[in-house]
Image (cartoon, rainbow, N blue to C red):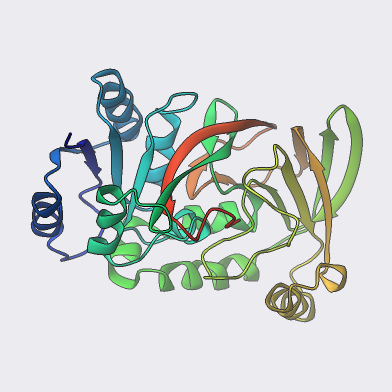
Length: 302
């Protein structure tokens, strides 16, 4: 029996890549039935994923970046319909964390070939924050400023380098904040320029995780506070991440199922690249919330 696939496409992703041509070729060869819907505004990917699941499709696929993938996944929370990722955005950290091929035809082929060792379905955790969902992380401070600073025009022109441009601007204006946190009911305080509430340790670099202990399937959120933006600390952070030496990293690290954070002064906030309203943050983990189609050798990716 052929598969029924609903593909959700963010039309602002992917540049000049002939997406429909590739989809048509790969799915025709494997005999899949497929249809396409386009996102036009925030909320479309979630609604379209929900509607497709309710209509009885076998797979929902999404072509876009982290924001579009997270939004589509939020429409499938708690269900049995798996989500396939076709990387096409400026930032594809979720695809990297799950080992999804960058090549569109190869990513599509995972949907067509469920052979053990080639592709499989992996169930992962998802986080919720202030009535939003996230797969990678909530970033408070510099990450929020980066999301605000890299606008659509920059992303289209410069791709990932848009975030580099924004990061330079953010570092020039970084200030230390006081983080008042509650981790599974326990009050904790810390100071820094970044507070991350992470579900995955991968933020866009293949094979590199912020900390080895961060796992998308452990039922825990990882809270990380980076102390300051001085050049020496940033270089130390980069070095420790590359060497996977968390003990040498200039950050504090906790784990919890429920996390609340308030900051003094207020800081910018983002979740998987999408800007959130400034204010108190309330996050929790949703264990084993979403099913993803991944390569057969990527089941333990972070």
